[in-house]
Image (cartoon, rainbow, N blue to C red):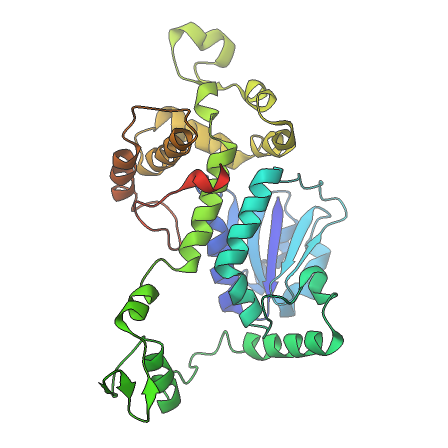
Length: 337
């Protein structure tokens, strides 16, 4: 795929690019990757190769003539994905995986999207807000635009007295203020110790990455049955090693086959299989296999395996794995069961 992110805020380009890369785990993006593409390098977008790049929206108009008909343009400011006229149709996600993934994302970060636009949980923002009342849509767009323009600001006046008070009330900071019997100067109640502890629990962004790991675990839960390891017996059929991709796809549920057919044809999946065949002791491979084992054990398909211990050992050695906030020792693929 050729994917081009665009935004008026360069910091958003970098953050979103890194998040997208992290969500591919256990696979890795192995093609051109430039989170913020300088204007003088825009012509490289016409090269016939996969890429994940970001571009200042001010340069988008001049870059359009360099984009192929297969390029996918993601407008981060407008929350809009545009497929090129020649883009191959995207496969449908497996139904069960899609339902669980959407529910997890809405549960963990839905409030972030709605909060940035002043929306409530009952407001339906699907189809770019077409189902919202007109006044709500206008207010939502105005609030998002007012926040969007501040992302690249170096200073946000976080340390004003008012912000200090808010931080204290939220349990984030107590510098320069004090409390007496749970009440801050001025009569404002601060959060209890239990409430403050809740703030230190896993962030919603940890759960986002874990949700995507769970999705890959669900899709690839029996992939190891189709690995062909190097041996003298199979040199003729598989060149020494490989993956029985046709058998793998044909033995999956019907609603997952189209998605898996495209997934196994990607370079990142081929690299993942190669690493699994020749580097199965590496931390990221061991971590993913442990997550698969936990899923299978919870499904009653695997027994007499110390899955928790294997996950702890794999997780402790996983410092080199790309991530943006995954908790160590936590991978619960059971959400896709």
